[in-house]
Every structure is written in structure tokens, then in C-alpha cells.
Length: 238
Image (cartoon, rainbow, N blue to C red; front, side, top):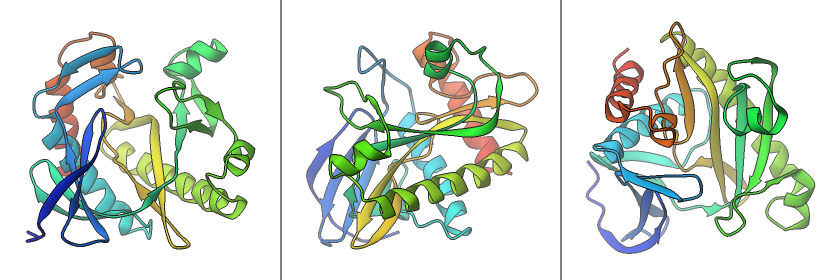
């Protein structure tokens, strides 16, 4: 365990807190049990969510590093905290969709569960005030969030992450329906940041299509804590 010293709070979001440390280039990312949905209109608490999301994210970041995906993850330092690289976060959320669910179904009247012939990659502006509107690469260029070369790197990394994780989950009889990624810059390098967890992914059991993610909280399906714990165990124990 790192002996790094936690200092003042740098940022608090809906699901995480970010703290400065005594090392200028490292931060502590702390996962909360708080849960929100629908742009914060629905709020609650999922017991042990912070610990579960920390464990899942740490495991998957380490797994992706083995495939030469650059991530901000450095090490787990407690049950609900990880040490991460300090990055300049790009305010664009990248969503990969393999199976129709959520807003894709609502926007295009596609039946939930329809498998996409090709993965869909979408960009959303990271802005609670504007409700995270969908944008394209040209908005990212024009708004100064990322250069054409940086978006190419983001697309390449995101597509590679999707291929790696689809295979990973499939071997555990799970379906990676869709997921959100965030990226950051350090110098000229692009890193995968934020988290990979049932808060940011839709993951179903392959045989039963049981939902093992935040949709259970969003839509009052019950069994949220059990679903998160089951997913952690299926990911980290196999």
C-alpha cells in the first residue's frame, strides 16, 4: 500500500471525490456509495457501491494495461480509494454501444437487446448544466477540447478497449451492452481515466439477460446491491 498523503479535496462529483496528494502528479480517487440517475433527478445510496466500483475499476484498469492500454490507474490504496495519475481531463464522454439499450432505443425506436452489426461510438459533451448533449468530433475540435490527432487516439483506444472487454465479459457469460469512457491528457499522451464499473456500463447475464448494472437503480428493479456484488465476483474471481 502506498504511503502517499491525502491532502485537500480537489473535486467532488456525483459518484467520486478527487483529492490532491503530497505528490504533484498523483491524485486519490475515492468512490462514493451515493447513486444518481436522470441528471441527478433521482438520488439514493447503494450500500458498498464505492468499494465494489473501486475493486472492479482497479481490476479492469490493470487488465487493460496488460493489453497496452494507457490508463490513469496506479494502485488501490484502500477499499474505496485508488491512486491515479493527475491528468487534464478532456470534457467529452465517449460511449460505445454493442447492444441497443437506454437512450439509443428511445432516440431511434430500436428494440432493446438488438445486437449492433458494428459497435456505435458516440461523443457527449461533459456538462451537467447542458445535460451532456451529444456532439461529434468537429464540435470537439471547434470547442478546443481535443485536436484531430487526439480524437483519433481516443477513438483507437476506445475501440480497442471495447474489443478487449467484450471478449473478457463473454468468457464470464456476460454481455457488455454499452459503456462510457473518459480520457485525459498528460503532455502529448492520452490516458483512459475515470472508472469502469456498473455505474458506467450496462452489463447483462448472457443467458438470462439479467441486468447487473445501474439500470436496476434507475428503473427501481430491486436487488441493486446484490447485482453489483455479483458482478464484482464474476469479474474478479474468475
